[in-house]
Image 1: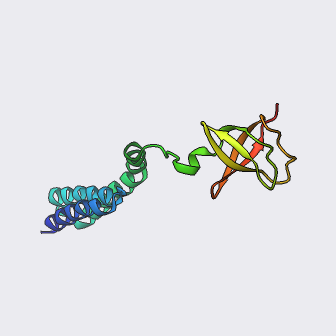
Image 2: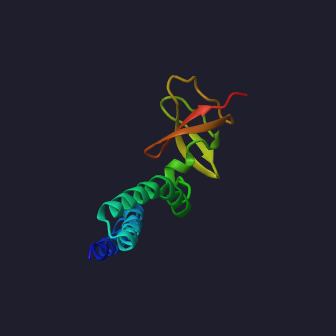
Image 3: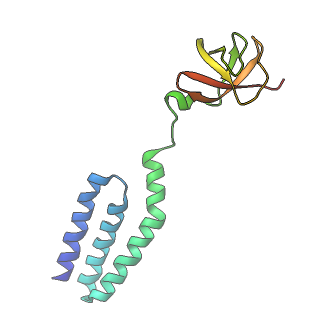
Length: 142
């Protein structure tokens, strides 16, 4: 009878994984299935609980990180975050009050980073931050 409860619990946890998508419930559900198998094979609930704990902890510790990395992939920066670190060219002088840079063929309003001296038109710059619709830039050392 206890093996049936382990089995139902494992299936319920794995079904609940559909809602979370974090692979935690799946790992614990698989652990419960192993607990069900151990309870069925031995008839001892304590051994089933130990098997459940060991398998669940092992899967959460080792299999889950690998599975998350494989399924979710690398973090891809989008929108303004994708522009940070990119190179641009100053179209007009850029200082603390403003200026313009050309990035991938588009003209952006820009301002110099911190207390940097004015950046001359034509100079190469690096985008260090996007503040609203303004690129905060740092002059490249030549």
